[in-house]
Amino acid sequence: MYQSNQIWLYDTTLRDGAQREGISLSLEDKLKIVHKLDDMGIPFIEGGWPGANPKDVQFFWKLQEEPLKQAQIVAFCSTRRPHKAVETDPMIESILDAGTTWVTIFGKSWALQVTEGLNTTLEENLAMIGDTISYLRSQHKRVIYDAEHWFDGYKHNRDYALLTLKTALDAGAEWLVFCDTNGGTLPHEISEIVREIEPQLQGNLGIHTHNDSGTAVANALEAVRAGTRMVQGTFNGYGERCGNANLCTVIPNLQLKMGYSCISPDKLVKLTETSRLISEIVNLAPDDHAPFVGRSAFAHKGGIHVSAVERNPLTYEHIEPETIGNNRRIVISEQSGLSNVIAKARNFGIELKKDDAASRQILERLKNLENQGYQFEAAEASFELLIRQSLGKRTEMFQLQGFQVHCDIFPGGENAANNALATIKVAVNGKNLLEVAEGNGPVSALDQALRKALVKFYPEIASFHLTDYKVRILDGDKGTAAKTRVLVESSNGEERWTTIGVSANILDASYLAVVEGIEYGLLLASSITKPEKIAS
Image 1 (cartoon, rainbow, N blue to C red):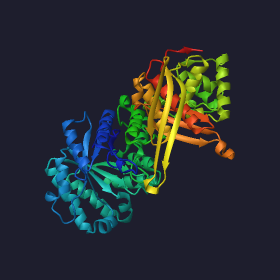
Image 2: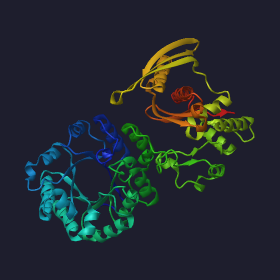
Image 3: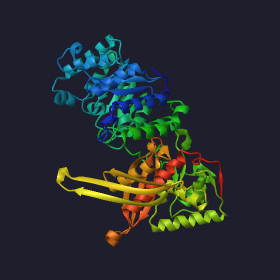
Image 4: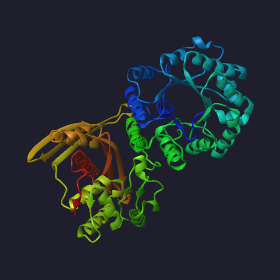
């Protein structure tokens, strides 16, 4: 048995997480993620099911050439097929070829799954579990046994469900993991069942929960309180259907609030960074409102809240955001007071004071623009540029001299096409530039033309790309003459920032947002980004 306060984290982002609708990981994606998880200090990382597809086979071969620093890479597979010899089962052969020390085998705990899913007998299911684990142990593999549908099986036939675990334990499994595969069990049931079973088993116990009832994290925490010491989950809660237990929430709760040891504090501060990097790799926008790691997790908007947090963060924060690599954000909107503006400016390295004329001018400018349709709460990069402009500290990097966008639309159902051509003229350092670019829409073409013109002077732009584009009609009662608000999210591969444009012309609004996105990216890439204090 392991020490009582040690929790062994088991990440299954690369397999269970990749089963989320909309995620498709390349071999390079998987390698980037596994090395980042290794760097985070995750002890067990499930790499996939060798033999299930060529990509997973290549992944395990690649890791034999480029081994991880500290994590155990784990191969995943089911028990042998009914009435087949384990020694000749191709699935088991693929597991051995993967070359991992640890293997996770899943088997059926629920009699219904045995008779209806596997179409075999309860006795044969026990033999499948025992034979598979015994054979892998004879091949010098260490085995984690995932008891699939454990809680459903226990509720319907507790004696048989328990027998499957004892069979796995007798065959040599070192970990027995309770799986809430359908995600339908509630926290109080988890704790009751684990406490009932824990005294009857001499092995190390783990928990694997799904989020179909919205309780995956709570279920994992309850299982730990009841005696399990391995927690399986995914980063950002990715997974099939409604997802898996989110390790970005599980880890800080266990470590910072419940007194368990998961990873070292110097690794815990990488939690937010890792969460966002994985979001970037799987090409899904991060959840801004995710607990702990979301951009809004420590955001403060109301003036009273901001004033209180400035005096003592404990007034409105349950932990120090820096412990998990996040940071406090002061949100700016038309509801803001001087406290918000001053606190937000301080985040940008700009010192303002309440009795400064500049502070009042910035607040007045903010409220006037928001009255016109701007929304700086969602576009903090644009707000920083606004502050710099108000203080005369905004550098003009180029001047627009005009642009045209031409669109060709060819209707035709499945064969429809939409091509756009943008021509743009800008001046940089007194030199006029004329560029043309194509895109699959007017904004894409405009963005490509502008980058094409500027990259000659600012090569950093080559790493910038648009990650999100949102359009909102502000006064719909005016029909096609309505004002449009455009939010553009940009990224350099490491950081994301959002800029805004408002105009009655959607292309003009888009251009304003795109231009500020490029300008802010250049600020991030230069020493201007995080300056010594800029006096007001």
